[in-house]
Length: 280
Image (cartoon, rainbow, N blue to C red; front, top):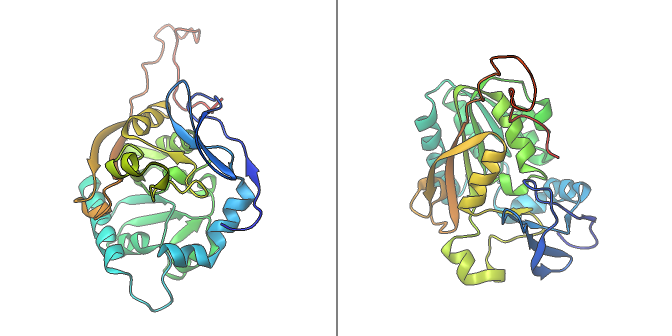
């Protein structure tokens, strides 16, 4: 992202607090919530700047996420796609109802659909969305426009760090998951060895794109705030879904059970509560 861009201040999606500055990379800064320890970018690109970034073909080309028409995917993209399909197979056999939030290159969505999965992609990038529609895949620009579910698997491959409010999105995910449903996700891990050794030079920092900088602890925290629980964590670089990425984390996430309803039906402070409230 170059030139003058719009910026906005952010608050912790878990606690609603402003952060203490850890590092500056003007016009951005990396801050940390003093309550829960979640790190995030503030100031960060505003919604208009983010839309401009993801609609720019140069972003996809430079990131290797949108290949030229007719060009084969890179060997690493093929391996990541195969690894993510393996994660999907372990979560649900085909045909399953799959919702992918953030389609990246589109390779995973196209491959999963070819295996018989009923796939819907949430992808705001117009170039990627056009490619998916040309492949016969249902695409919406916003999660609110996706079919209400239930779905068997939700996939967030390197997406959570880009979302303006991960807790709100994960609450929506929880509401859409059917019985036995599972969320599969990958994120760059700010507590990985490369991140700790390289500090501000870590290639996964990218404050112009990554709004949140997760550790394993804060992935678990954000999931819990949304009514979900991380049941399994895998670290790169041996996992095929994140091969040669020593800073990557793969998580398997499931819904927490709803609390038992108030037997007396009082609806008072000790009655039934739900994890699906909006964020404050």
